[in-house]
Image (cartoon, rainbow, N blue to C red):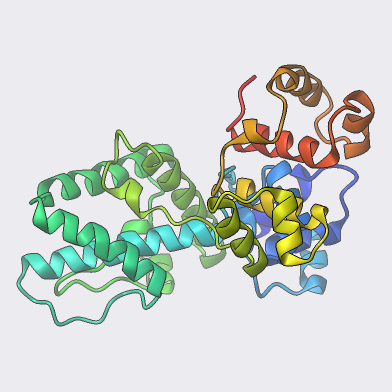
Length: 317
């Protein structure tokens, strides 16, 4: 825990307040917090401590500790997305295990409807196309990668379960591996990050890549996403929702931050991106007005969008 909070504090931009860092860790549902998390490469820490109280956070950032574990970050997924994706893998492993042992009466490891629906689709595909060996090979390859990338500190396998095989609790894993629970949480986060980096490759993981669950959208953003897929412009969405255009711009930014939309060219002039990226990399961490003064032809929405693209790794000038 200390390592994660310390990482967030030391990697945040100098002008950002402790409160804004706390908002990222606790998962405040505002577009400013989404942008703060993405632009500071802290997205996979978003909502990692939903029960953290601000006084405790203040104490943690000033408290010295011997905990010094290197924290890994993923620029394209929130903590909830990492957890839900792993839950999908857990459920699929459990389902395939019971199917192969002809025992279909079991309690699913996840009751999450979205997770169950996504797993069901792949479960049927594996059965209909006899992909059991392919699935097993992908699981084995995934955990080999996680183990290698974390110098044998791979603990996620303890949380898999199947036919007549129960998962372990974090308390049990802590005792088995002789790792304090607070440190174990950090190691597991790193495991999840490497898991997601691995299965993003559809070529290497054609099955498991289908289990990736994107971060959830705010209700109004989900409405804008639906209207966007129907072909409405931002101006038309603003009229339909009876809101200002900058509200729709916030929705569009959320869609890009969370990976639902990647057509940057629809919103930003391509001939500006290269020069902006060069300038941005030299001035990363500056306030937005610095970029606005240098690229006055761009709106603040466009500036934020290019920054999101650069930090997510979507834009390469």
